[in-house]
Length: 127
Image (cartoon, rainbow, N blue to C red; front, side):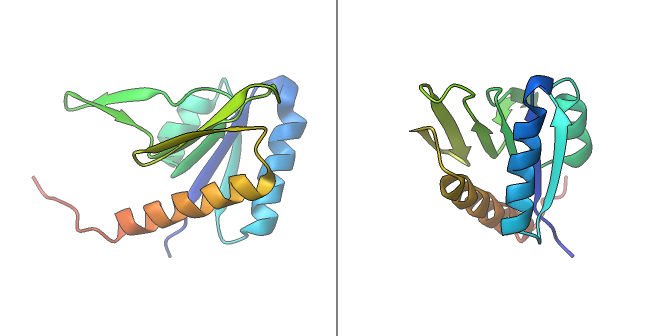
């Protein structure tokens, strides 16, 4: 069974925020795999889980593969300051939102899930 993977990671000082956000996503979308991590463990967890969506207060890190610069397909840089915008990216679409609501985040979760499902149904190329 295919399951969309979401990783939520914030600084240790914001563990309550991490837990509240991940629990809210789990409650609203119980069919998704939602995992939490500290910022120190973020890279390790990204490599282990290969998440479809990352929600963090860090920007989307670029990775290089076969000479191409790649970004994670869906990433939320959630601002911890309500006066600064959060940055969203799903595939090639990018936007910002000031102090986004849970409904906005759940809408992004749905977009990331649809992207993950469409990518999983594409035939894989063989070398």
